[in-house]
Amino acid sequence: DTEVTQTPKHLVMGMTNKKSLKCEQHMGHRAMYWYKQKAKKPPELMFVYSYEKLSINESVPSRFSPECPNSSLLNLHLHALQPEDSALYLCASSPPWEQETQYFGPGTRLLVL
Amino acid sequence: QKEVEQDPGPLSVPEGAIVSLNCTYSNSAFQYFMWYRQYSRKGPELLMYTYSSGNKEDGRFTAQVDKSSKYISLFIRDSQPSDSATYLCAMSDDGNQFYFGTGTSLTVIP
View 1 (cartoon, helix red, strand yellow):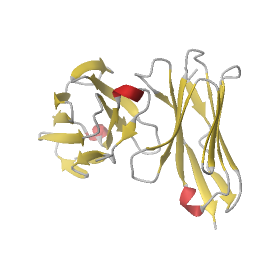
View 2: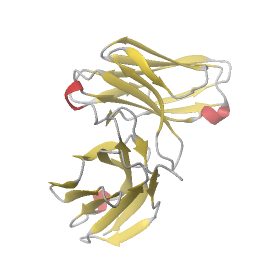
View 3: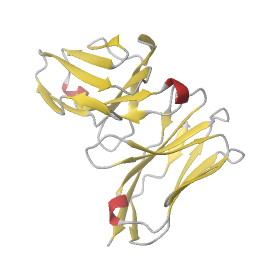
């Protein structure tokens, strides 16, 4: 398995909903990242997990809650989002032997109504 | 001043042309440099990774880093319509946090 997978591909949610995004990799990578990307903009870093511990939180609002249950899985829990949170949410991972490179998943396209 | 500057384009070239994509940066501590290709509505795909200065070649793609000028380039030879995408540069000083350019939109016309 040589890829980062993300589910769901698309998600539509209301502002009062609670939903979760899932990211998975089985490449032995020990760093995992969440990015948010708006249309025609570069990805913006949200969170970094290193060896299942949160190492970087880029001042993200608390309505986004990351979780790393194990070395292969990364979740992003969403609650009480705003329409401006609509974006492509990208997960990436890095191997410990080459931690400077990041491999991205296909993303979850989120629409908040 | 932004950490990384990249001309957003759009850039339009005929098939077979040599394409040159560039980024400049302000942080002299950057030493990890990457180029990503992103097709519309897809996640970024890692194309090239370079550490410190120098050139790196992979097929039709060549990445160059000039740390003295704080300038990196990606060259695409014999460009194909399938190369039409947005190209993002990204760089880091510690390998943990990466700074992305805004992306250059490229169209290769058959």
